[in-house]
Length: 271
Image (cartoon, rainbow, N blue to C red; front, top):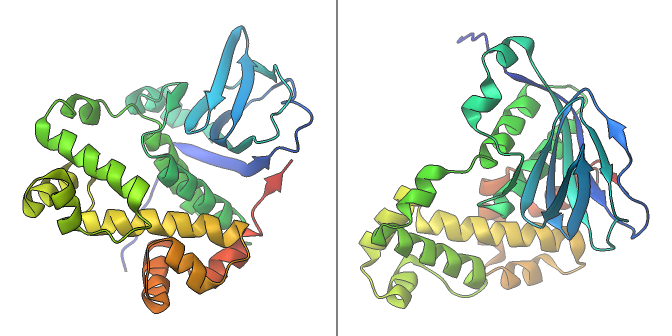
């Protein structure tokens, strides 16, 4: 048996999903904990001390402890954001872990859908009766998504990396259509093997994995927001076979589509 002693630099308090009803605004308060906010839809207007933030869809905000923050406008009717409170361990704080991670206070997330998936995973784990270190690990993954990613930004000048980003855009917009490595290569007028190599170098995924991941994310939204049949959901997300859809969905989420739909309803949602 392998036994490890793991000292995590953070400790989770709690988190949730806020869905606006079009009334009210963020309260005025001064917390002792850090707070991460990620906006999935709409715009959140919030002031921390004298600094005003307009946090748009796909952007995150890190609120600092002991600083007063308050909403400056009523919540828009379409606003939807995730929130998470956490503490920094004293030992980690003395070693300036947050500077090491280089987390900006306000930033646009490179992959918003992955950020949403992380928050959903966090909320699902939070519902379990027995608390585990998984919450802290997921939080660290969320914080890592909030780093600028200078290396990726600098690499975009490379023609191969630019090609990978073009493939990524096609995957995000055409995932519901018949899509494969060869069809992407034809669309981008390049060799399929070369496209696969540069894409994996940039995104650390094969093109097939990326297509499946995008389709599963779309399916997650349809499963929790629509009353469509499983066959309809599969078809809308680019899967022609329901059995194969179940297999890929479970591979990427660890759950069957039916269990995902039931478990999501248990999330900590506030309005």
